[in-house]
Image 1 (cartoon, helix red, strand yellow):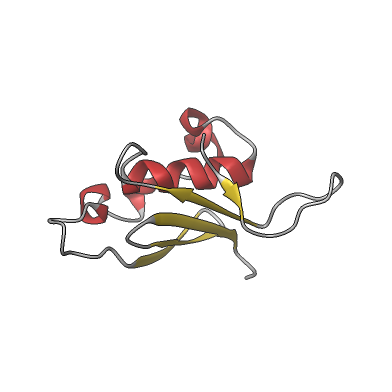
Image 2 (cartoon, helix red, strand yellow; image 1 turned 135 degrees about the horizontal axis):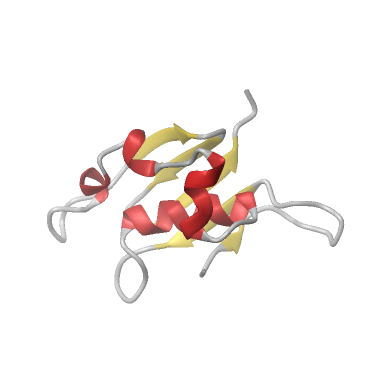
Length: 98
C-alpha cells in the first residue's frame, strides 16, 4: 500500500485520514479508494468485504476512471463509515464523523 497519512499521528493514535495517489505508476482511482479505506480499517484490501466495505455497492468503479488527459475526476462518497473523495491525483479517505 502506498498510503500517506494526512493528519499527524503519534504512536498511540490511529490516523483519521489517509491519501493514496493514483495514476501514472500508481494504482487506478478505484484501487486507490480501496487501499485508502483498507489502511484506515487496518486490514488487507482483499479483506474489506468482511468489514462491509464493498466499493461497487456504492459506486461504479469504472466511473472513477478519467476518460482522457484533460478530464478531472472529482467524486465524493461514503463507504462503510468512511467519507471518500477521489480527485484527479489521489483518493482521500476519512473516518466518517456521523
